[in-house]
Structure formats: C-alpha cells, structure tokens
Image (cartoon, rainbow over all chains, first blue to last red; front, side):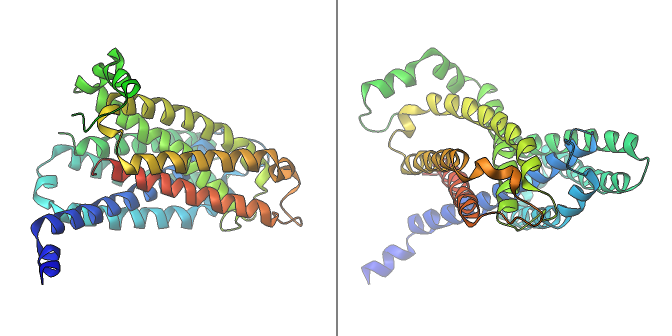
Length: 149
Length: 165
C-alpha cells in the first residue's frame, strides 16, 4: 500500500517525466546529429569539396532516405517536446526563427539535390550548398537558444 | 552549487579563473553549449554516416576508402570543438557535477568510443582502400562500426541526462 503511494507521489511522477523528457530530447539530438551529418556532407559536395572518387549527385541520391528519415525523426521528437509547453514556445520569437530557418533549409536541400543532378548546375550547387550549410547552422543555433531566452 | 565534499583538485578546477568566468557569464556558457552541439554534429553525425557505410546500411555503391579519407578529418575537427567546449563547460561546473553519475558513465562511454576507434584504425581499417565493389567490408570492421555507433549514442544520451540529475 505504501509502495503504491510512493509510486503515486508527485516527486516520483516528476522524476519519471523528467526521465522521459530527457529521453525524448536525447532522441531529438541523435536525429539532429545524424541529420547534420547528412546536410554537412551534402553541402560540402555541393560546394565542390568532395574529393575525387566521390560523385556528389550519387552521394546525395544515396543519402536521400537517411536524410528524410532523420528529418522525420527530428520532427516527431521535436513535436513531442513542443507539445509539453506549446504556449511557451509559440510566444518565443526564436522558435519562429528556427521554424523559418528549417523550412528554408529543407527547401534549399531539395534545390541542391536537383542542381547536382543536372549537368552544368555546378554554379547553382555551390550557391545552394553554402546556403544550406548556413541555414542549418542558424537553425541549430536558434534551437539551442530557444531554451535560454 | 557544490554538492557534498569534493576532492581538493576538483575544487581547484572549480575556482580556476576561466571556470569562474564561464560559470558567471550569461553569454559564454550558452555560446560554449552551442559550439558543443556544432562539434557534436561534426563528430557524431559524420562518424554515423561512415559507420553505417561500414555496416552496409547506406551508400553501398560508394567505396568506403575515399569516403573515410574525406570524412575522418572532419570528425577530428568536430572532436576538437566538442572536446574544447566540453572541457570548459565541465570545468565551470566541476564541483557540482563531480558526483553526477550520468557524467561518469558518459566519460566511460567516451573512453570506450575512443578506444574502439583507436583499435579499429590500428587494425583492420588499415585495409580500407581495398574494400568496396567486389570486396566486401570485413565483418570485424562492421563490428567496430556497430560498437562505435552504440558508444556514441550512449555518449549523447548520458550527456543529455547530465543536466537533469
């Protein structure tokens, strides 16, 4: 009976929810790390930094589903974290900035893949590659600072 | 906040001027945290792609040799960034984190990840340029890659929990 009471006590409930919250955050960071890896490699290939022996278009093609999976994972875990205090996030200007940067970054990634697959698209690839890297850098920075302001 | 009786050397690190500066700065601390995440993406994100290639999960058409030669220097830069920022963040909170069990497990997993990488690179990895095409990645290399993924995931997860316990 007392054991059950201990299980029900608010302290226990908070401890449990902190563990779950931190677990979802861990997953979110894992997806971001992997997503960041895919984006970095794609962006570098776009700006022409991939060495000989690595075809940029094939690289992006090969990373397409891992990249999409990482986006989906980061979005689902991000949505769960958002749901815990939606009002707080919505009133945080950095959250809006992060979403705009993310949407732009995802759009630019599509353009990058298209320009790399097109013959003669190297100039555009370079532009989209740099834009992609900068936008993701901004999105991650905004994400980190959301919790701080 | 200092919890319990920490050894003198930990207290000395805690009171080191740079630790105090990081701890008391409203800007320096989150800036270091941001760099810690950038470094983490460079290190773990890139290593994960390489590990998954060795495991045959992705980029199977791409020979692992050129990929490794390209990505490993990036991951080393990532490690430098993550290590420098992490060391400062840790020094700033050394007395309050000394008894943190998640930190201890994280440091053990980090040591395991680095040891795994060292063993991999001084053994079967030396033949990485031969793999690809008709020559499959050896099972021992895949095992190193799998262990690497597990250790780094462990480092990330325990790292996140440090802040809460």
